[in-house]
Amino acid sequence: MDWDSGIDRIARALGRIPWEVWHVDRAKLLERPAFKDIGDTSDRYPPSAFITLMAMAGLNDYQTEDKAEIGYWPPLWKQVTSKNVPHDISELEGILRPLYGEMITYRGKDAREKERQRKIHVKRLQTFLKANSSLAQELWSMQPDQVAVDLPKLWRRFATTMDQGPYAKTIAYAPKTIGNALHILGLDSFDYTGIPIPSDYRLGNLTPQLKQSRFTNDTPSKIQEFWADVLSIMQQLEGRISTYHLDNFLWPYEGAHDKLSWLEESPGIDEALSRQIVDAFKAIEEVRPR
Image 1 (cartoon, rainbow, N blue to C red):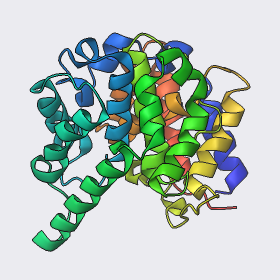
Image 2 (tube, rainbow, N blue to C red):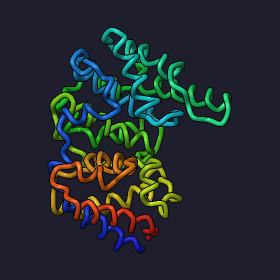
Image 3 (cartoon, one colour):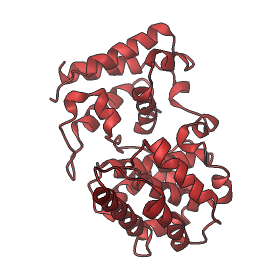
Image 4 (cartoon, rainbow, N blue to C red):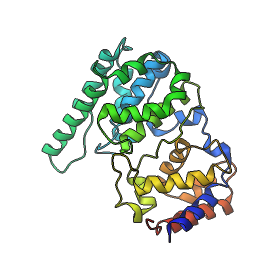
């Protein structure tokens, strides 16, 4: 299937999904596996501290031995809920250091590779939360409504701070975890303009012919480019949809064992639309780079 046909096919199917499905309310967000152990963290932490915590969590969410909802987020919440609320960035770094240095099991063929990943995660923690990170310092003092306005700018600054391209998975993922933080704090409208979808293995499974294309420092991968084009068409029908909403849909869809049943559980998606969506996803498995 050629690029334009694939975009048109999946955009027409997803464009029929009602806004209520895209706009997950706070209660349903907290029911997701990643947040089932969050406890009272969002109530105990000052809003800016909670947002900073979630940004760091997004920047280091990769290369764990188990899926993130099993091997990453539960240990994170266990560590955070067992400690007092940090008063500054240095204390937050002290809370999270054992998580990345000891508690998480990293993916690797042998012990040497696992240890290498451990050191990388600890270094990334220090890069973002040490006092020389002006971005973390600013996040620590920003009000949620300001973060909501500045999210596209923050995405670019994550790339600079972490010395990575803006289309790298964790750089694209950090704004999503901040979006989740804002949503949990009761602010569910934020600017997501231009922020790409995190190009992880699940998205690669949806469009396997596009897997080989990687991002560069200033250019998105073909997977990110494909979904940006899909989103552009969908926004003509529902302007409120952003990459944040699209990723929140694609991630669990790809992981669902029975995709038809998963779709039909959502309000406003009947059997006919479910089949149209599943058929569209099957079709884009053959979409080729342009």
